[in-house]
Image 1 (tube, rainbow, N blue to C red):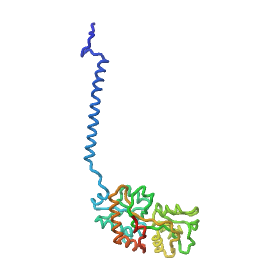
Image 2 (cartoon, rainbow, N blue to C red):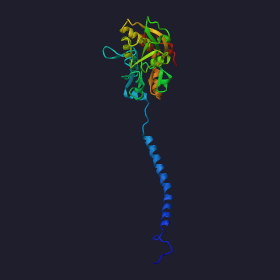
Image 3 (tube, helix red, strand yellow):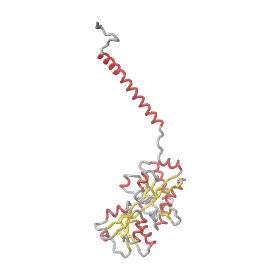
Length: 295
């Protein structure tokens, strides 16, 4: 058998074939890779251009014509369910006024102090008007409007009780609503030996006072009045002032347009006296300077 020493197309060695193939791949791969990357980049750009940008929340609210607002219906006189089974209270009136002034349908979302912020973050409501004191800790999670109201945190006890200092609470049971700023303040301030008893909402805390489960109440002055109305013999009165907080409308972070609109509404409502009128009708006093002079 004779072999030709000159390679022909049909007589190329395996190594030569592999070299030839590798050469063709080496030449083609960069072109295909660049083409693929370019095509992908164009597709991404087209998709981004075609995708509609998300409207801000205020625009969404106006477009739907409805605003879900969280309240705490177990916090008289701020929010309650009245004898007719309807929501009432100072903050219910504020929510109604906001919706009316913006020509929106109001949807009230009942919450508790413990879940009002989680509900907001989860999108179950657009804003919170629910005795929400403006605190640095809460500002890490949500944004706030300017103040529209104020809440004093006090420890109330029967008029005859010898309570005037935190030391006088040692050995006493102090009721407080779980997750509220009242809870945070009494927990921080109470001396060892003070028994803090936490309840799910203000209505349950009030029941605890009325039933004798606690003798003192860390809360707002208005709620002491509520207890006294239910049982005048208890005769609770503010004994210790723990703190004065201002309250604001809460909403998700990054909603600049909504924040601006709410602040404009608060400014106008303070100037025309309507917010002060609501506050005075429920608490018997004028809004404090911390609210009326807030920037």
